Length: 84
Image (tube, rainbow, N blue to C red; front, side, top):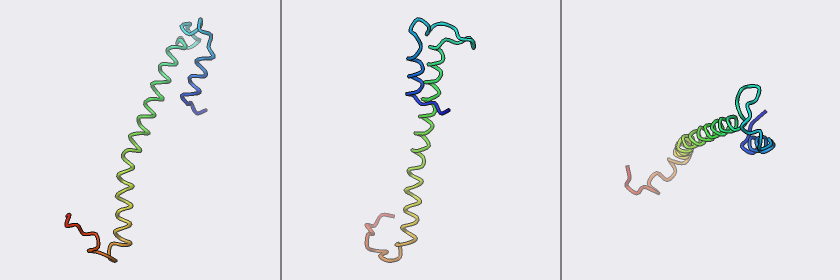
């Protein structure tokens, strides 16, 4: 089962309000469970964001390398602005 923020919140909201501070068989309250699950989801979101941020520059470099290899020799001076 894959947890989503929506699923976590739906599960929590299905609990009667008078039970959110009641200890469950595992000894934790629904409020404690919710806080932990939201922290875990936030950590996963941060990891995904960081991964994406590191992939974007790498993809740009890969594309640049391909274009230089494929088309670099055709018009070598065409877009040379003197930047080295």
